[in-house]
Image 1 (cartoon, one colour):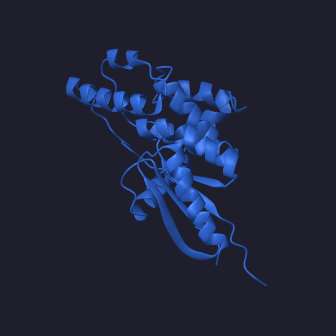
Image 2 (spheres, rainbow, N blue to C red):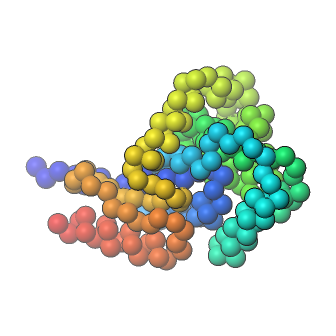
Length: 212
């Protein structure tokens, strides 16, 4: 009996990565149009950061956001740059996605936290704000924090970071494709690409899967 191919995608992303925010609609379109399963692995862009952003940090980040906005038309709330003493630690938001992933909301949680951070100027390093977002997915604040706070959740999040590093991924978004046909994965993109570019690459890859 011929082995089923079961094509699927691995998406390496971070909820506080601006290019991942720009890439969000492309990933949604892939899911809805091509109906390919997408496994989310949290990247860990800046986990464990403890130093507040400096003025030069903000200026550099604002340039990135402006590029993402110009390229993707994704909305941004520029009032973020009026914050003082903001510590850009991406681990809490990543851990929130990990918790919601357990409940079947991986990509939806990623996109919602991204929107909260980039378009609504919500501090997603604050567990209270993350709990409010979790409530939108049917997980009340107490239950969410019971799952988010323990070492088990911290370790599960670190495992995602380890998978990312072990896979050689150094930038986000990164999208890879694989199947049960063999153990190798094909790189679809390292960094942002438009919907048309991504779909062209995926269609060629899918043709290769069915053609041999």
